[in-house]
Structure formats: structure tokens, C-alpha cells
Length: 185
Image (cartoon, rainbow, N blue to C red; front, side):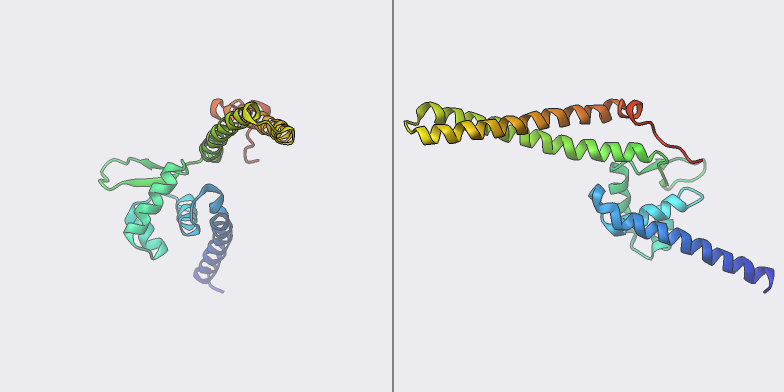
């Protein structure tokens, strides 16, 4: 085998290895509320040795520039890619953000903060309705059921208060004092 053939063979192996990782990342992007096709875009930008333009991405993935623009916006909002500047280049350039912990934290905070706030509001409203019913009903069996429900709601409220503390650990970065970030060996 000639050295050129060996080089081509090794490039093919490199592409296969990268594609294995990109495919798995793409398959799990739903955890970030991101489609698998945008996950493939992320993988492409992640392995790129230079920042990429939307045209570069479109060519690499054989997808429209509009799709690349929509995808890169989703990745930027998730803090998975960032726009960079290079002297003499007028088009927007993007590269993968190296801090995977930051993107996970931002997605975790956003998703759980929103869900927790909605659930705490529901708890507050439900408690109010149950307490009102407890005061106005003349039936002991209803009062007993309301007491049981208020206890259940109280447990749910305690859980969401705890979850707010967990979210705060991510917001302040204190989580990394408890569980330090790992770095490549």
C-alpha cells in the first residue's frame, strides 16, 4: 500500500471514529431539547479544527444554509457553540464551546427552574383551594381527605424547595466545589 493510500485509509478511520461519537451525541441531544440533526451539526463544529461559517457547515452536512442558521441559533442558546471573530473574515464564524459543564448547567437550570416555578405555583393554588374547602365543608370525610392531600402537597412542596437549592448550586457554580469538574488525562 502506498503512503497516499495509507493516508487515505487513516483519514477514513478518523472519520469513522468521529462519526461514531457524533452519532451518539446526536442521538442524545433530545436531553437538551435539541434535534438530532442539530446534534450532528454540533458534532461537525466540535471536530472542526477551525471556526466554521454557515456555508462551511452547509457544505459539510449537505443541508441548507437556513437549516444551519436555525441549528446554530439553538446551539448558541444552549451555550454549546459560540461566535468568534477572526481578522479579515466578514462572515460569522462559530466554534464549539469547550466547557461542556456550562452548557449542561444552563440547560439544567433553565429546564428545572421553569418546571419548578410552575409546580410551586400549582402547589400554592392547590393548597389555597384545599384550605378553603376544609373551612367550608361540613363533611368529616372530605376534611380527612383534604388533610391527607395537604400532607401530600406539603411533601411535594418540600421536594421543590430542595430542588430549588440544587438549581442554585448550579447557578452559583457551587456544584463544582461538591463534585469537581473532570479534565482529560
